Amino acid sequence: MSDPVSEAEAAFERWHEAFNARDSAGMVAEMHFPHVRLTAANRFHEWPTAEEFAASQDALTPNLRAEGWHHTTNLSIEAIQSGPDKVHFALRESRRREDDTEYEGFDTFWIFTKQDGRWGLQFRSSFLSTPAQGLAPDGTAAV
Image 1 (tube, rainbow, N blue to C red):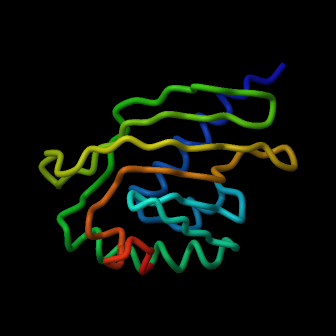
Image 2: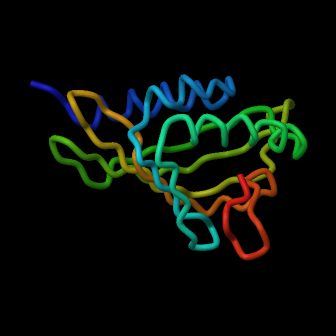
């Protein structure tokens, strides 16, 4: 018998590792599309396809480096709701410099869904507001 929470959390761990490696193909492999993010400014941003998401990540990388980002650490992950094909996680993330000091900690909510037998990230909502996110003054995503 499968354990949805463990399987979804394993997909999160693979996604997170790919994010830190700035491996957009690795991130996409742990996602479902369309993928939606609710920004800190309460604006929805949707990536209809894997290709659009990958391109946005390629554009995000120099912005992350410019703000001093070296890696992101997951401080906590808690499954707050789960079913056989959907898991809701509450997370605490920490963006860090090369010396491992935090420059932005934030809470975030992620939804993983199981489609065609595979778990993938489908929705995120976070309080992340660093300049690397490429947000325009009105809160819409610029990348």
